[in-house]
Image (cartoon, rainbow, N blue to C red):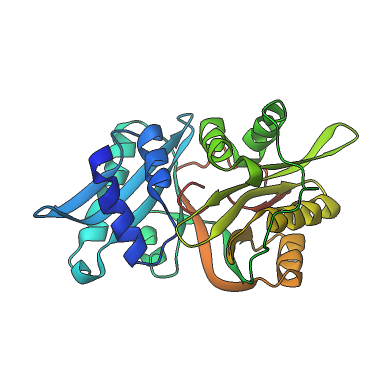
Length: 276
């Protein structure tokens, strides 16, 4: 995949109902310029897959997409295998992905096993007319603490990716502190049809509640998506109280030793199934 293929990638994720924009495809190519792939029929892109390495500790596989008119021809399987071959060739010891129920059997056949479960929650609402002026946002100075915390929680450094979130949606990047100590944070991105909240980290219930409330005040969209850990009691409670409804499960899977699982105790929601 090259920069010239981005419109083709956006076309695919749009017709399949996914929320990515050109900015998301640019993130993949910036992180893995030789590790994203397309399948073409003539001049039309009919399938994609993408990868992101994290510090050579593990890598993510995502965006396995096939044009609905070209399914059941092995395109998705071929593109997934190409991504896996690329990462194996690069010497990445562990591969990870977030699987839909439809994709999970295929990943299991390729040696992926379950790590934990995730629920996608969606809020449909009448969007606020204007964002609250009382809502604080992250500063560049506070990001170093966020990156340190996230490295421990996620299991690897992904500060470059988080920086791209901050640069494109500073008003959706929120930080909470207690006695000058970082107690939580939330990132957001503006997708094709919805704002997506995540990663969402909080050391305590009050911080989790504050971050969600602030994010919803900042978001100007009528649809908001959160991919929350099923094991996070507070995330599920707060999302339901705020009018979200669960729409589909996801399964975080890995292949390899999983030597850097991170610490999910403070994790309410992931960055997104395409990024981890």
